[in-house]
Length: 203
Image (cartoon, rainbow, N blue to C red):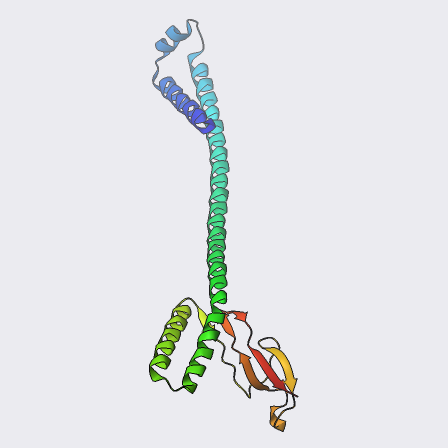
């Protein structure tokens, strides 16, 4: 609103300058109803008008710079807000998905135990059916970012990636400090470990 008022004032000054430039001496006399030194009065009016225009332009420029700076700040804050809320939304989805997937890991364990038991009774029909369901569930979870950690006997124990539940004498010298058995598989969701593999290490 302030800029609009100043712009209107600026336009009125320009109109006044134009009127003064085209107005005849007689017209000026009629307008002022008094005798003046036309040349001096015209020059003074012109100079004052020019100074007023310059002042008005300067004020408009300052107001414009302020509004421009304010706009740029608001735009930057809005962009940061969008990025922040986008990150928070992604993290929320990841966390929610992670909770659901973590709760399904015991189901995968149960399927694995069931498959081992069915193998013992040599029932091919039941074995194939359970194995198919297990594979489908695992594949579905993989599409959501679940990854099975590749841990096997003989690997070097890493406290940052493995959870040691017990230690036993190493059956061979080369297995000291190594993984002897994997009791429970570990899984990752993206780059994050959601369940550490439980292992037995040799001492």
